[in-house]
Length: 300
Ligand SMILES: NC(=O)CC[C@H](N)C(=O)O
Image (cartoon, rainbow, N blue to C red; front, side):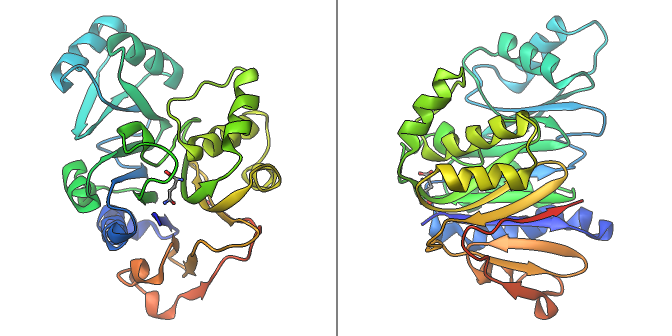
């Protein structure tokens, strides 16, 4: 199984409720994947304040206080360093360029796994029950304009922090997946020959690295996902986002469930309708199942 949820808010009056709404959606999908869970939240002022780079990491060898001190020593004197404990993830935010912060984090905390980076994005993930993780992240208090979540029942790689979703391998990007790619080993080898580096054995990471590679080459999200459909075999419903866009696609057979709901105030995607029932105005939403291999994308 695995559960996917996503909420793209059109009405700024709802931004303060993003975390509450996303928590309800994620926890409703907990029986589809009780191994691990994760979210990407766009626009939360605690985790990723405006004008700051944010880097999310798991398996940090340093405590939050130690990490802050190590980063203060590496960055120019006086640079304000924020380290938020959203256990088991730490989110570092600093008003510098994203690449400068990634380099500093890699130096300060070698061995930590970076699970997301960019502006206005925090990626929180880990092993455990989705409800317990949502509580531990402090997800219900999150604000912002967009959130994506995943509950995992592992199929293709071990249950580890690095095997959990979302995969956020390009700046501000996030990808979650229900299904399994059958040719991921072949595509992984091809990407490796072009210098792409992987953090896990997971099939979904290959999809995320493929999309990040295509976006870095200048493709838009719709074209990148069309190329993914032409390249990957297997079963998938994918939800892919960045700061500006939010997109869903299913494979040609479309055996993995997905439902989209739209109102003037929001667009939501979930593996099952029951994850959407707590959304305000759901009773008058336009509801549909995404067609096979058709890309549905929404932009801010
Ligand atoms: N059950 C699923 O949909 C699993 C998704 C993906 N293949 C993984 O193992 O992470």
